[in-house]
Amino acid sequence: MFSSYVDSQPLAYKILMNEINSNHISHAYLIDENGNNKSLDFVMAFVKEILCSYILDDDEKKILCRRIDDNNYPEIKIIQPDGLIIKKRQILDLQQDFSRLAVEGNKRIYIIRDADKMRSETANSMLKFLEEP
Image 1 (cartoon, helix red, strand yellow):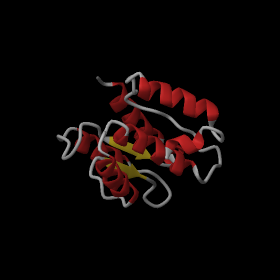
Image 2 (cartoon, rainbow, N blue to C red):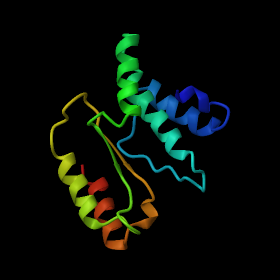
Image 3 (cartoon, one colour):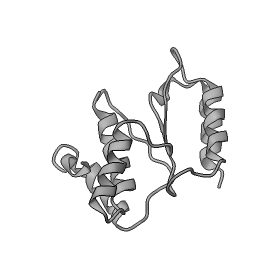
Image 4 (spheres, rainbow, N blue to C red):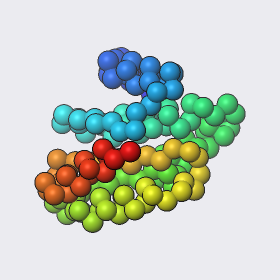
C-alpha cells in the first residue's frame, strides 16, 4: 500500500504519514506529476491510507481498498480533461457534488488530473472554491 513508497518517495511519504498519524490531514494537496506516469498510483495509495487506515477489521479494510481499486467507492471522484482541457462545467459540477452529503464514510476525495490543462477562468473558479471555508 502506501508504505511501498517509503524508499522511492521518502520525503513525500514522511510528510503525508506524519499528517495522517497526527490526524491533521489538509483539505487540499497539490501533487505535481513531474512527468511521472505512475503518480496516480502514489495518489491512490495515499487515498487508501487515509480511508483504510482507520478501519480496524482487516476484512472490512480489504473490501474498502478493493472497492477503491475498482473505482467503486462513491466518495472518490477523478476529474480529468474533457478533450484537451478541463472545462469550467466540470469544476462547477465538482462544486455542486461537494455540497451534497457523503453517501458513505466521512471523507470525500476529489482528484484533478492534469490541472495545468485548465483555462484561467476555470482555474480561478477552482481556486476561489478552495479558498472558501
